[in-house]
Image 1 (cartoon, one colour):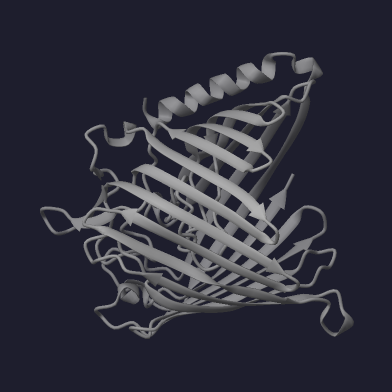
Image 2: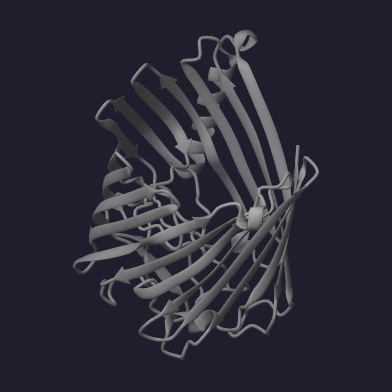
Length: 401
């Protein structure tokens, strides 16, 4: 079944669950529309990229949630639409959620599309592997595409076990030839190459165990299937890159230890990849200063180390030997004013990535977010050289209904 076919099937199942006993059900709905503009400080580096300094996009999200009268069934439908005026590859139609779920005292069954997050660290999420990354949406890896799945979870005194059957693969999105923040050669997403003969129809499997021991939260995960990270290989003409999605096996662990104002965090993986088995880890701490100078504001101080020993034959990563330093500010006011600022420094090459995110709510239904991204220190042989002239300021205004 194609992704489009799955979306229609998921919608049909969802609507049928809404219809049954609809007069007795609980309904919740909401929506938002976002206007986003990016302002680039310098001209583009690569041929074919947009010449204008500003890039405008509009996104809309709707949420429809249902729960039956007895409370043991629920359903969710969250479509996402995005239109970009400069880069057609950044436009998107997706289902972040479209599922039906049944709940018992200790078990849950979920069927449909869902978005699942694993991980505890701030700068990179190594263990988060269920959903595909929407790389055209943002470069930070936080934006995800909805993943078709069957999920069974079991909760007991000794922890929670979640099993996932993932029947349809989602390809990663990339900026097009017109877009900024792309590689020197554009990625041809219309010609993916798969390590499995079943292509996007390969059935992936995942298992996760989570529990806590005292002040320690523990997560252990296994994944076997199509890698969410493709290798980018030049095509026969040398004019575009083709995404190669290999079959992988990955073991992951995430730990978070809480002690007073300290949060100690670790994520680590071992992956059997395309060329060999490699390991990667990110770990550090967040220390929070509460009610600074007798105010309501909290300030968090973050430090994380990133390590990755994959070879050049594996999918490219910039998080191989880096230090991340950041601060988080929460004013804890009625407008939910908050800011996160951080810089990642590559110990080997001297490359740096600066990221600042600030947000504030106005009234009950308007939210404004400001982001600043800047790159420096890259030579022509370094990975981030491809975006060295793509420093930008992003302003986003969201209206909620």
